[in-house]
Amino acid sequence: MELLEPLQKAIEEISKLPSIGKKTAQRLAIFILKSEPEQVENLLSALKDLKTKVKFCEVCFNLSVENKCTICRSQKRDITKICVVEEPSDIFALERTNEYNGLYHVLGGVLSPLSGRGAESLRIRELTERISMGDVKEIILAMNPTTEGEATILYLAKYLRSSNIKISRIARGLPVGGNIEFADQATIGRALLGRSELE
Amino acid sequence: MELLEPLQKAIEEISKLPSIGKKTAQRLAIFILKSEPEQVENLLSALKDLKTKVKFCEVCFNLSVENKCTICRSQKRDITKICVVEEPSDIFALERTNEYNGLYHVLGGVLSPLSGRGAESLRIRELTERISMGDVKEIILAMNPTTEGEATILYLAKYLRSSNIKISRIARGLPVGGNIEFADQATIGRALLGRSELE
Image (cartoon, rainbow over all chains, first blue to last red):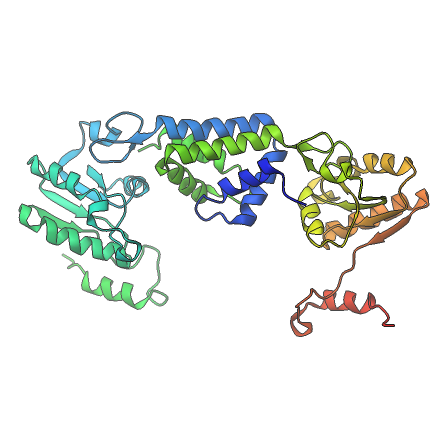
């Protein structure tokens, strides 16, 4: 017995989503089949709106419904600082801390020679253009502490050094609430190297 | 910073799907945001077709694009046997074996007093109507070997006993390619009880 064509097609499309395998796609398709039409309509229109209404900020490439995002439009932000992140979702995480009042720049990924992502695939040119406007005094590199993230930080630090502005990176160390006993070697090592003097 | 409204709405709708939490929903929403418009269009139209084109067979409640499913319409099936399953996906699994040539009946779940699912929520009345047509000689109960599945088998066996037809259940035992050493106690016990004589 062949699967019904619309079901097969739906499973195929759903399984193109990240971290969704064939089995999960089948379960989701059957769930949608059994759902109330109104509920499915809500899901479809939400996805449609997501794709049509949300775009990328033309300055920092954060998500936005306007041409410029709320952070770039705000009068209250410190325009001398730009925090460089991999993805828009990192901005949410950083904003939640309430510790940063500068601007952002979304690179759109990290350098990854193995998967063929070189510097030209990241928004580095757009970043240097923003720096060349003259207001920026500090660039904070906030990549994920992964191998690719580290490589990207080293690359950017070298690339931007000539521009005569301060370049920093966010600290690596023990997570708050963490435990020295169970922390990995590399994290403890970084926490030691990054120690700060008490006054 | 608040999440953008269309993004928030999309995450909310996606996380209503089974086994999709808030974090996965966020990742999926961002993936959709970054996908090519054509790709998203394909997904949306596949989901729409799924919901509008696929219905349930009016006889056995299998999935179908017609009023009757391909199995119920087929001239080659043995109409004296009905295999009762929980969900349409079980039919796919049974059909793949090529060991069964009878008809099916989708109950639409199992008895589950804890989650408030009683006999009236299952398609038992529809099953007895099919039996009363007189062609059926055997009912094969193919519920999942879970507590609820077992309860449903016992209930149905008792409920249908009066109808004077053969009632059977599929065997429990060691899975093919399995290993006695690592099988659980209950499975080995069932395999022993269900042993068959060699000729």
